[in-house]
Image 1: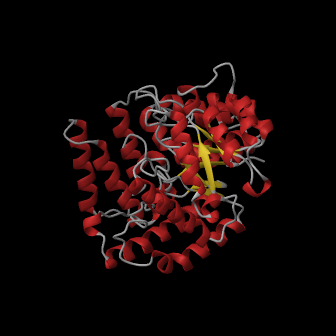
Image 2 (image 1 turned 90 degrees about the vertical axis):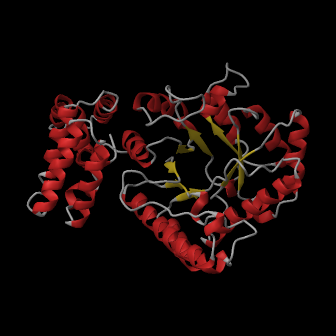
Image 3 (image 1 turned 120 degrees about the vertical axis):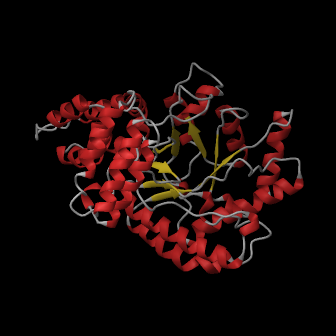
Length: 420
């Protein structure tokens, strides 16, 4: 069975934010505190993924900020090794597959030696994180080829030379991806043929930087599969949708279910793992997992507990339609359920409807909240109604009270994510 996952950050869940720093604040005490905090967050994120049956996840490159920089003040391996080994055991015990993806400044085929040197150090850092988790070579590092520099063939040669100088430990983890500007899927497959590196296929990049528009996703995925060995694990692909309101290559706010099912049904025979690249990250991952792997109404009922007040804020009619949809306990209307939710979040929100939902949610807190807290919320609502403040002021305050008074029912609500 394929795995479906998401990249780097977990949204809509309180307290799972990583910390960072600047070079100016990169000192021993600060970075020790950041490493401890970020490893604790990663551990909680893995727990969240296990709870939600998300068995694929990309770990943020910023787990240890500036770890490959020459100014890094401590031995990060000594600092992180024990915690990462424990996290790695949890990953292995729960059959989770993780990966990492260095950013745009990790350019292995640059003509500037200092850029290549930094890229090598950065790849070694990413590899060391996976190594310290004691994970095998199916847990990968995704890498783009880099720049063209006026001559694609020479740029490819440069990549091949510099790749050859990497340690074997790094090489066994690297997979290369087609990009949306320079190196199309045919280019990357050609490099793979030379170096025997597995290829990860990105559907959105291929639609933008296309080699042959007569070939569909299934064709290219089958070509990519041939580049993976048994020790590399199940081939993985990236799936995303173009955001219609942003520049070409920007990912959509969510994965739309009809488009995803069309894609999944086309390629499901290939048994690849699918990494979603999307703004709402884990929210879309859970949605797609429920679409293709689950069939019990209880799954949707648990999802509705998260979505219901967010939907209520946008449209009360849709709120009641979804409630009615879930009354048949022998059904599993996942497509209809998620389509209604997707459609409602594309609507323009009405302040009156929004205030109604805010007061409804705050009703769960009014008995615990102090008089001062109740008065503060009502004053914020009044300001919101006159467009004096943004709704986020109210929602963030209520969300803090949810955790202050330990209202479990609301802790996972997407009401605090949407329209905020």
